[in-house]
Image 1: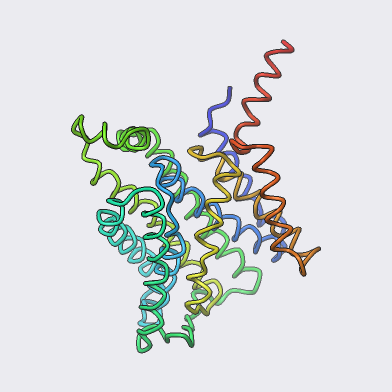
Image 2 (image 1 turned 120 degrees about the vertical axis):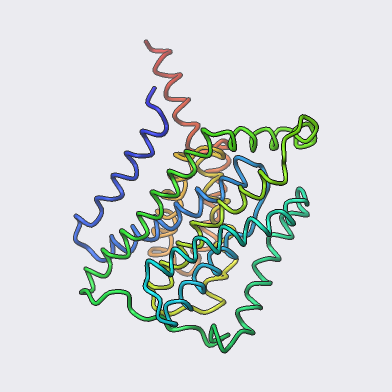
Length: 311
């Protein structure tokens, strides 16, 4: 059977070929697909490997968008702003994780959801720095043509996706990944055998935030204008969970496939049924989860068993 890491590399390579289409619409979809892939892979560290139901993705995304946006308005270059965003997201989330991840189950879910609202209010009230509710205009990062601009931001988001995928694969094959699996199975037992669960959970929370923050930064520069209601939208916290469930919890390949399928459904429903798109999209997702409760990744096992049965 083909190794999942090889499938993931092949999937990323196919996505990287999108600019060959030479179409701005395809590039826009590709950029969003990469962003959704980052969301799903990052959420999978805490939600899949660790087993904690996090709703903090929107908080990390908004934090990254405003960190990059503010730094660029102050004169920082895009690479420097994104690097600072990555470090700030990693450190900030790791510190918060040490506190929030002392809670479990729905208590943690509510606390992580509250983080989104707290950061939104902070940004709304820091008007001198962020523009508050009026939003923030961000300087152009390139002077290319419309198509050249689209290609630039597509590859910026694709690189962030590739780095996120590499990080997730490395975590899954490392001592950290083993420790997270132990915590997911039985956190009390993991503590009893000497595993520093607080440290492991804090690192996981930080890693789940860093590239979501970078994605937020790239998004901010891509659209040139952000406001709190946009980048702290709670749907950014819900979508990664849906994508991961659709693709298969704990599987990097599965969650990326889930992100792509979700985007495809979202785009088709939006274009053809704009009046009822939210309800219809929700119905399609529910049906998919009912028929594939273990996600798209379970299809591989079914096909493999069917193939060996005919052999």
